[in-house]
Length: 149
Figure 1 (tube, rainbow, N blue to C red):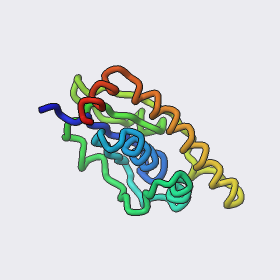
Figure 2: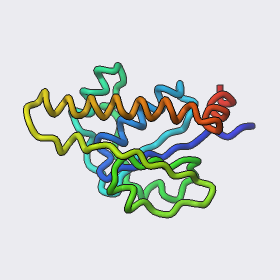
Figure 3: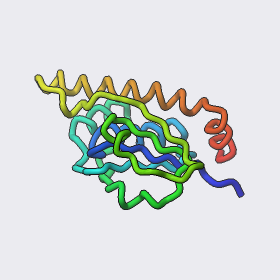
């Protein structure tokens, strides 16, 4: 029996970028990838992340932040960091775990009106979606996802 591909998405606070990436990867893979997100200093899921994802018809309102320490000893095929700070502080995973870094601005740090702030979350959502679609086209990922069908 084939094992399901496992992906961990890391960010510092696990409140926006990693939560959005987790949901987008699950959605785009049709649920055929076991994806989790975690943070080194997790906080609550950001309301504007929830709103930006709702606009894409993906509900992340029930997702909970996870402390990296709670999952660091689990097996993952890929660990994807989505913020520079997480990439720098990412713990060592076994050699067979592939690491990727996708640098995205922190939409929670954007200042301005509610609309300007929401626009930052939308930009991150669109950027993540592009990266995820490319990720799903990687031969090893595509093969694992098709086997899970």
